[in-house]
Length: 65
Image (cartoon, rainbow, N blue to C red; front, side, top):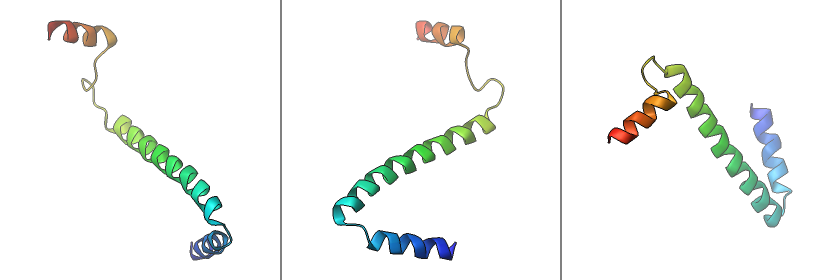
């Protein structure tokens, strides 16, 4: 892991500010996508019977509210 960190640091030092800003924008979006994906996977693993509604049950619930 330390080897990867040092390589990344060297690569970052060689980037211009403009390139660094572009890379950061891409990394930021990827980080949020990964975070959401991880949370969805955890939610699926924790899903218990009765935790969700079928489409028909949801429509009946919305109409009764």
